[in-house]
Length: 419
Image 1 (cartoon, helix red, strand yellow):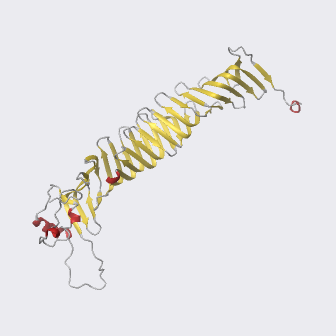
Image 2 (cartoon, rainbow, N blue to C red):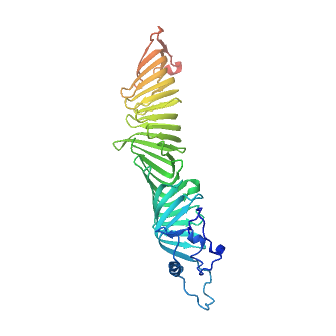
Image 3 (cartoon, rainbow, N blue to C red):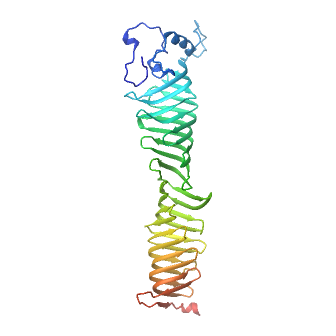
C-alpha cells in the first residue's frame, strides 16, 4: 500500500473496504500516513509496530473518571511522533516535489501540519532535483502546496553552484518559486550577495534579491548596492530598477563609482549600462560624468553616451557639455560632439562642434565653428580650430583649411565702469 499524497497509485481506504481494523484514529488517518513513511521506503507498517508506535506517539495521560471544575477542559492536540523518517510530496503525475529526511518528526492532526527536526532533503522540478536543503526545523502543510523551513537555512543549487543561506525557506512548487528570507547570504564563484530576501524563480533561472542588497562580483571586481537586484543566472546579467551604486575596484581600491536610478550589468562582457540620472565618478583624475544614460565598458575602459553629457573636472574647475560623448578612462581622454561648450572658473568659454579633452595634459582641442570668449578682458575669437588650456586662458584660435580668417572681437567696457 502506498500512502504518498498526490501519487496515482491506488490508496487503500479501510472504511471503503469494510474491513474490521483496530481503533487507531491517529495512526490510520489518511492525512498522517499520506505524509510520513519509513526511511527504509516500506509501503506499509506491520500492525504490531503501529500499535507500539501509537502508544508512544500519542503519549497522552490516561483519562480519569472526573476532573475538578477549575481544570482547563480545552481539547488537547493529538500528535504523532515518528523517528528516522522520510517525508515526501509528489505532483499529480507521481513525480517528487520534495523529499525531506529527519531523525524525528511530529504530525499534528488538528493543524494538518508536519514538523521535522534538523531536516535534510531535496527540492524537485519536473522530477529532477534542483536544490539540496537543510535547516533546523521544517513545517510541512498537509495539502502539499508549501514547504517551510526555519533556522540556519542552507539551500544549494548543485548545477549552478549557488549557495543560499538564511533563516527561513519557503518552497512553492506550483509557482516554481523558492524564497529564502531573513539575513540572506548568497555565494557563487562569480558573485556574493547579502540581502533580506531572495526569491528564486527556478524555471526561469532567476534570483531577485531585495532589502539592503550588497553584491560583490569577482571579475570585474566591483560592488553593487541597491534595494533590489535581479540576477539572470544563465545570461550572467544583473539588473536593478531602483537607485543603484556601482563601485569598481583595482587592488581593493575604488577607481570608479557609477550611480543611476536603474542599471544592467553584464558580468560576461563586463559592460554596465546605467540609466536615468546616471553618473560616473573617476578617482584619478577627479572627474565626474553625468548623462541620462551611459554605457560603461570595464574591459575596454570606456564610457559612452549618445545622450546629452556633462563632464566636470574638479581640479581645474572646468565643465564641458555636449550632445554626446565618450571617455577613454585609461588614456584619460574625453571626446565630445554636438554643441560642445567648455566653461572655466572665470566664465571663459570655448564653443565648437567637436572637442577632445586631454585631462592629463590639461589640453583642449576644438574643431568646427569655434568661438572662444573671455570675460576679463572682454574679448571674442572665432575660427575653425582652437587648442590650449582653458583654465589659464591660454587658447590659440586658428582659421583652419577653409581659408576663413580668425575674427577677433574686443568688447568695449561700459563707460561708467571705465571712469
